[in-house]
Image (tube, rainbow, N blue to C red):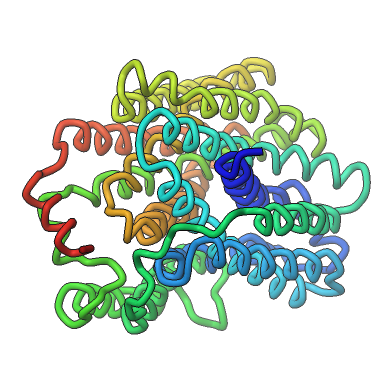
Length: 459
């Protein structure tokens, strides 16, 4: 097998594991609460313990990939995630399970930017790059739905613990695959100093911002959202000062961003992440509470969406060749917007088959959007900063996941019902904003002058 094929397989499997772990416990939460005697107010932390380390550490992880090599960072992250999965699968109490989920989150935070960095370095341009990012997007886009299905199968066929233990053979296979890869070429950033102060400030800022929304219903260590918001503001101000003025080799070279419009696509991914997570969350509730499906039935209801996301992502390169990567990205986010709007209007009276049909449209748009936006962002950054580009993109998506879901839950509570039409409307508005941001990127393009400044910075 060609080295490029092995590398692509490793990156796709790694991303599939990361996304799968974000959703596989969703349908198992009632069983977990019953067996470990977890109070309802504490149960969200089984999810937050995984999501918060990812959001907070992605920027640092991207820089580590540039500094030490993406292959090495991917290997370490896989080992950390495997250890957390084994610990969680044997957890005797809620505290142990939470610690295990934190370990999984740390491992996932190391893995995801590393996969994008490796793809960006080994597939610099052309149809091969579009195909590689399409397959990576297929793994990312279908992983959430596969996680719900796998969780339903494991909960009904065995026990919730296998929703964590299943990672052990998957990660062992991934480690073996990584070991077969040839030496990587991500060496451009080696020899540079690590921006420790910027990494610390950025991690604290993103983590605190995520905790603002995660602690609205259940405070952490008796600290509520107001205090976390204050910490986030202070840390963000420090981060901007360090990156723009104080650090000689910043984590994100803000001084060189002028004219690049690089913030537009990460901002779009922020809203895409919120809409995706909200759609998965509320569809899960809708199928189980309104349609009265079992955990396995709920997982099977997600299967068509998963298949659509996979097929659409895997064939993104064909669409990109016809209408360009930018055009494919904008059309994909627009399709997601239409699908969520249709869900908002039909969940009150729609049958399970109708909702599943609409979710297929959403899955197809989601699969293309993830792969094309990732392609565009990593291509806009110079090769020496491919890890940073990956960290920026994945940080935007993960913070969007947490903040967007919290906002949609608050919106849904304002008009509670088992159909969640208000929440789907809010998710559709998020996708509409993402569509407008993507359209701005398509219209703006890149500045040759600022592109030269990037080349000067990395030379």
